[in-house]
Image (cartoon, rainbow, N blue to C red; front, side):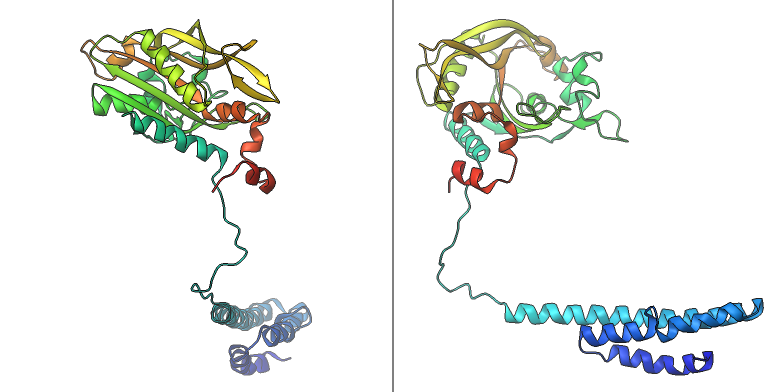
Length: 346
């Protein structure tokens, strides 16, 4: 088709496009005009035999016509899509006053159940539930917790650092919440913090780069002994595992933020794949880390008076696995509806 006719027909084509009432009609016009064998597409063939000067002027006309057609098609396609959505909403409206039939209600995930239960337990005993940011600074996550600069936990093979943000990371422990509480709330403190933590671990049956942690901190001006810490640990484990038959064993350990530091073992046995906490068990299971708060932690938080305190931390995911006989942590995060239904509750 000569270029003059192309320009003459352009207004007609645009009107035809904008007048279509269905995607089928619009698609036909699109194919007829700018499809592989379309009128406008075929017109570009004249450029092959045109001179250099002609190519410049012919190309300008052809591109102008093609762009106008494409713009009209895009505009009408959006209009038809919007209209289809409106009509669909009209025809598929839901009468919320109708009675519910065969409705499948959701449930609470096993981890959610555990975390709610722990919060309720400590709130009922007068503890404060504290929270803090998951993206932290080196100060709150390491420095204030008396962790030296050369400590392996501060290296990128253990910790996720935020690219382009100096000294900013995904918290590796909820202990950072304890530091914020010591700085902002003052003494005395009886608190727990529950939340997500992140470490640079490969995902396997027993490790996850994201997991949940619960930490307890008790600080006061009156002397606090390890006996108080042991009592608090026994109370919590008795509550979580639903037994009063709890026997603990303390082993010396090292954590930068506690002194003395201890690893806590719990006497237990296995029954049908599940862990059973019992004083007559034939096994010892390492259950958590704990200790008396290091004096340097208090100094780093600006507390210069004589205070005493202890802290301990549990991995909630691990506690849930032990209690329910779950052997693969990945099950806690997959989307297997059968598994979720089995462990979920409304």
